[in-house]
Length: 515
Image 1: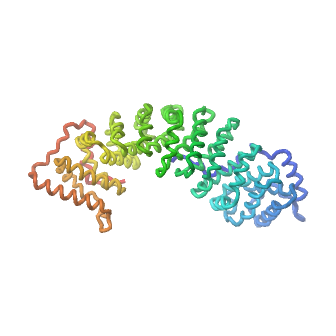
Image 2: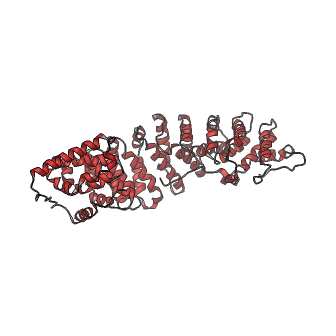
Image 3: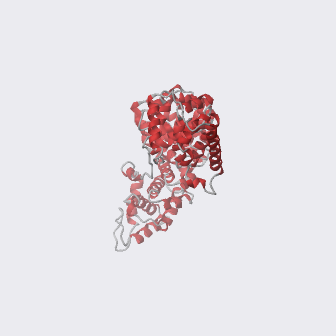
């Protein structure tokens, strides 16, 4: 989708969050404890060498030490060690097994100071950037329960660093994200979003964490939890300014992901009911000074268009939506996305089809898209026509036939999507039954020759074979009724642009027009 938030390492905070003074003294005192005979103290990690295994083992033992100074020194070492070049670190999970267990134990230890917990959490943050297997190991521990406890800590740096660990883990894979998608976790993050005392950088961390957790859509959380998160995101979006531009981008993507669930439209309902939210998103898209927010804003509107008919009605009820469609249609950057949105609108009710067809030059734009060399744009425009032929009322359908929609059927039948193939053949049957004079056009186009032979095998879908037999029967019957010279089809209402399209289609009918 044009964005990436993969495992943002805490290495950059090395300068932002130096050890607190008490912890610094503990680290210095640890020099008297962390020693080996005839070996000098190691504070800054050395490059990978033959002695790495024994050194790691020594510091792992010190993590378990009852001496606070030894424990603090070991935690500080691992925090620095995991912030080195992570490509050079071992990837084997067993190498980190004991370290992970001890760090997780420390962040949940009531006897450990908040400063030591903060350093241990920081070490986990860097550790979570090493690889997927490490994060899979982390989620199998009790770390989430402990991190959620620490997210409510009065120690602000510990609370925010705990959020950072969750964000890194959630960015790893679908399995890790699902582990983060608990009602308690989401409500804690919503509470953080509502905290107006958060600094800009800390707010960015919280929003980024929410985005990583909901990324990929299909967020299975309760309606009350979803409502809590959406309200918190909306409150931040309404109040954003130039300084919160990065957060606004993450907020829009988070809302777009929340709305992305074709199996549960309840979250779309929650979003559409938020005061000023949709209107604000549309105004963001129409604001030329906010181009960096246009992609997530349009994706959010598109995911809402996938919802129920009433949710689509709500979307189209905003006068700004008409301008959004017009601007996006004229933008090479957004034409694919708006074509996808229009294809979903066209799959709705008659009123939704009429809404689209009322836009100036909409159908001409769709025809141009079908002959575009851009694969996705062409595919989405084919879907628009296929859905129009499935949902249009009699008046619109008659207009489409008069405009030569039959010329598009070969491209639909050749598309590498069986759903488009089936819709095209069903439309051909419908057109032949209601407008029999079109048989000459379909005969000339050799409509059945465009069917992929693989779809005509014995195990082919029944509907494809049924449509094929029906079309053959109608064509044969019409051929017997009419003289051979009766091949005239009138398109007197065509304008120049559409006529040019038909000429292009005629020349291309024997060429490969699939993806």
